[in-house]
Image (cartoon, helix red, strand yellow):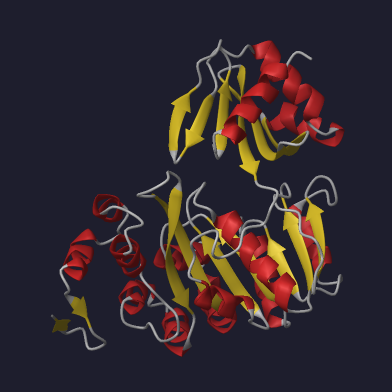
Length: 366
């Protein structure tokens, strides 16, 4: 097999705990370990090797897309090693491939070092929209899988997912899963979205909030009694709210704010921080729980006031990144330096570490 070296590289990546593998024509492979790219000592990968891998493994019905668009997403399974999410693309007339390792076992809150109280409360909502946000590689998929599996273990629900491609495979427990892979089980997100409300779901997972059609469908589902989970690329709770309204024209903003104020249940934003011991990374989370105050700010379009709520409106379960970074630093799980690098407000975090906090009246307490 011409691309046996690719399988060997994937085995090496999994054995060493890499999250991603980058392969570029005429370059050695690179592994992303603890967030950093490390080159592998090997001969450069040839165009023929990468090209034959794509040709042999892209599903037949997607090959035209690769030719027309110059990029393709698909899944690849390697023996007893596991599954990978794959993006193949053309660059400067050559081929590159990026693999994301998808762990077969669905992690628990404890295994992910997550505080579960607010996450489980959001998972128990009867309807509405819950967003998991963060940059690529921030662990959104793992956290969402953990939340969905908590529902699976504790509540009888019908859960329908739409993914491109499927990452975690769920085994029915108290809940029943129907997982639809775009391109395999449905030709497009749009058609899968049109059909989902006819499939009697209680919980809907949309792989990514990618456009206006996706968001409008999510809103419609939430308004008709469904709980909708989805992901969004955003670096903070404030940015995630602003980004959602970018889908709508000025004339549509008021109606969109009404719908969002009614439907939003929570926003969880995640960053992965290098761990102090044992390698790996630890998640830090900013959480916005949509209580009546948050809903009113959304309705009035006063999104810029959202960040100030996170430090003081903690009873509902909201928290700023600084609060979680403070916890992780004090617990010895991350270094102060890494905490500062990942803080949206390092000056405030420095004050917190000195024992200075803001109370609900925005007064300084020592």
